[in-house]
Each structure stands twice: as C-alpha cells, then as structure tokens.
Length: 329
View 1 (cartoon, rainbow, N blue to C red):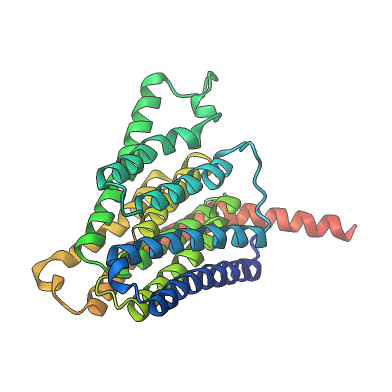
View 2 (cartoon, rainbow, N blue to C red):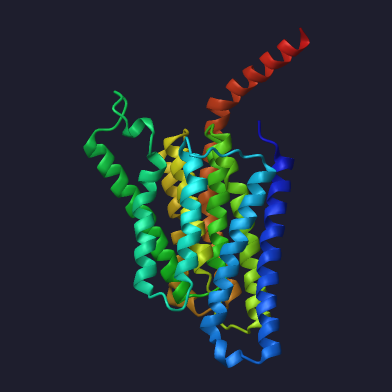
C-alpha cells in the first residue's frame, strides 16, 4: 500500500543530495576561477560544461539515494519494464547528456546519440515481455514495428521540441514545467493499479527540481550567466516522463489517452512563443507555462481519480476487509 510519509522522506533526501552536489561542484569551480584568475580562459562554454556535468552527477546520485530510501529493489539483470527503465534507460540518458555537454562534441553527434536512444527505448522496455513473445496474446511483426516506430517518434518529437524551446527561450521554467507531468504520471500510474511504477516518479521529480534550482542560483550568482540552459535536465526529464508513461501503459492499466495527454502537455510551453508573450518578463513567461501545463494535467488527474473510485477502490476495500477479518481470527 502507498506510504505518503516514506515517499516524502525519499523525495527530501533525493532533493538534498542533488542540491548539495550541484551547489558544491559549481561553487568549487567558481572559487577556483576566482583564485587562479582564469575567467577569460575558461569562458561561458567552459562554465556550461561544468554546470552540465554537475547536473548529471546531481541527478544520478539523487536518484540512487531516493530509490534506496523507498526500498525500490531492482533486479540485475532486469526482469521487467520498470527494472529496465531505471537500470538501463535512465543511466543511458545521463551518459548521453554528459557526453553532449563537452565543448568538443559537435551538436550533430549529441543529437545522433539522443535520437538513437529515443528510437531504442521502446524496444529496451518491451524486451522479454509478452508483447514480443510467440504467445497467442503477443503482437504480430507488423504491430510490433508500428508500436516501436510510433513510440520512438513521440519521444524524439517531444525531446527535440522542448530542447529547441529551451535554446530559444533559456531559463529554468522548462525543466520545472517537466516536473508537473512527471508527478502527474506517477500519481496516475499508481491510481491505474501499478503502485511500484508510479512510485518511481517521486524521487525523479525531487532531483529535477533541486538540480534546476541549485544550478540556476549558482549559474547566476557565481558565473553571472545571462542565459540559463539545462539540456541535461531537460533530456533526463523527457526520458523519465516517457519511460514512466510507457511502463504504466504497457505493464499497468494506464490508458492510451491519459498517457498521451500527459506526455504532450509540456509542449504547451510553446504557446509562450507568441509575440504577445515572448518578450515579457521571464517570471511571467515561466508562470504562464506552468499554468498552461497544469490545466490539462488537473483534468487528467480528476478523470483518473474518478476511474480509480469506480474500478479500484471497491477492490481495495474488499482486500482491506479480508485482511482485518483474518487478523481478528
């Protein structure tokens, strides 16, 4: 059964670890530059490389601590979609964003790695599942190919569009906006009956929020960067969101409509590129983005709660009653 207090403790621990790592690493670089006087030699790109590395390390270690706090036991080699998501796809996303952050890596190489990962994630998560087996309920080759192509294209499209927007309109609002659908995905997957799958969302949200805030504060204070860009946070956030929804849909009872609505909701950030909004103050643009995303997510949560009350709550009530009856004997 869900344990909200334990989840909050795990989120707090993950956020603290991520924030400490980012703040410490960035502050150490800033102090080193100040002492050695190498500001011009390092340059803004050098700062961004170190900032990106700090974000990757902060997210990775924060997730390790958060999942350990909730005792989310993962098997190796992985035996199900959630195991493969947390032990293969998330580390791959972190590794790719780490490589992409180095100055001497061409942009086309970085995007080739990202799109290759986007194309292979559906196959990785479905490996060994009934969908790809020879069982009667398995997919035909045509169905398999169609599902893998469509899912990979959706991930690649969302990843590309949000990364493009973060380059056009730098700031912390896009990474923070990604946290809303990830949190919604976790709650919706849990209400769809896959508690362990939904649980994976909470440490991820905590690490992304803490890393974004810590990196934003330090980049502005220590390096005086006019434009804050966090491609690693965006990349890991998009992969995390897709993975949670994919696992919740194919290995849980999350409907296709809910999954698509949550996955595509961050693209509403593009509304702020309208001429009437684009040149407004950053805090106003960021607030509009969060509100735009929150509206459809609240609708999805309300609908998911209605479905839960109709389908799952009576079953859970019977289980609880049976447990109490057995305990009283």
